[in-house]
Length: 250
Image 1 (tube, helix red, strand yellow):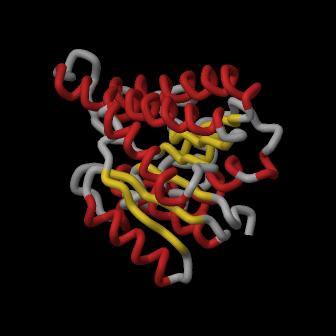
Image 2: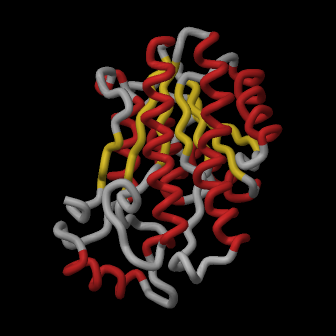
């Protein structure tokens, strides 16, 4: 129960890694608030947490908008009195080589994956540095700073930027008690790791040779890495980008 009496915010909390992490935090005693643009998936996460005996709430927010990001943090603090941990997980995926990308696609990927993390951190840090500190974990990717594939220029660039932004912020605010790290998942049990038209069974077969470990990661495995970085056990980890990808980028 590493997070008893802690208030945890999870962006992109309506599905996938965000939902699994919200459930894991709540399972270890946290009060969890999930945020995202669509309310229905957030309510489903809240329901799952509460059915398991946890405490959860939701906030609708588009983290690419400064007003939404500021209001998101303010709402969490107004409801629960503080914010101890933030997991900035909201993200999007788009394919396309450099010359194939159009401006709207490029802008959307950068807005969500980079600007959304920056704005979320901006207001999370402002609260934490005034109130005794806190912990932030950002979702980067094994694609970007650690590994590249052709045809994913915007996504790879955005996630490399998240890794760099995490390190910059970690250095700037650790002296004020705000500890910041990133997790970089590889292919996991999410729709993002499926090729167009590919079934989960076909993905499993492809991964036998595509990854050294021979399979995708479970959502629980990725959430476990997130919780470690957010926990006191990782108290000496500052600006770390923890790769969890079954050996893909080794």
